[in-house]
Image (cartoon, rainbow, N blue to C red; front, top):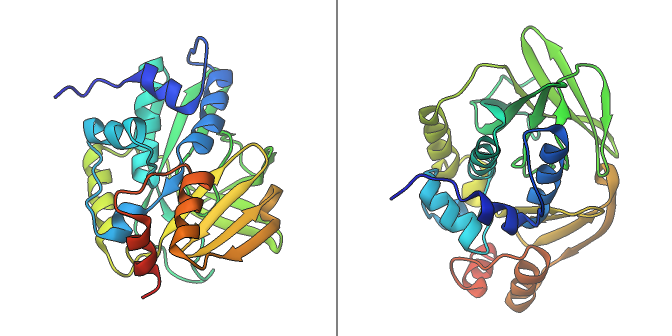
Length: 271
């Protein structure tokens, strides 16, 4: 089997038309289109199914099927697409701090992100942080607020470590911390296996999904659906109370065809 990336199919999947080239305009367009078209979803680890990072299987799942994936899958796919266009991309790894107490010790590197080098300087690209998806790449400028259509972000730097901070209704919140040490595929294989199989981590025991459009952020945590506007302001929140409703949310809101019947997933949520 070939490891060739199917760029034409990827661009069709995310709805990007016309010529693409390794510049900021193309990177910005692809980033926004990706998080809208290919939702963040952790169905496979939640169902105990293996998560592959091999490019052949990854393209079958995220391009040929109506599926999404979590950070290692999403950013591996994005990295391959950007490299196929001609971008210079470095894979990085982050330590997630989103739910961690401020004084807790750093955890393992369980998040994948990308550094994209452009004539304008390096940019952070990340279509896989399912707690709060980025709608566009961010310049590597520390201590400068970056306002996007759907959020406000702040990169800080201390002791050789960057922190990505996200503005929320209650104030700033740290998403993850990272340095610029390049990662190789083996690093991601280890992090992917640990993240998708460890019962103490969220993805094994909690169903997490997110899709980010131009003006709405849809988040599903188990059977609770939240719709947010800019900077995480909640516009609507409700509990999904039946398997039929759950199936409609997967189909109509997240555009996902699950690997098993929606009724089976909902029954698992209700245990």
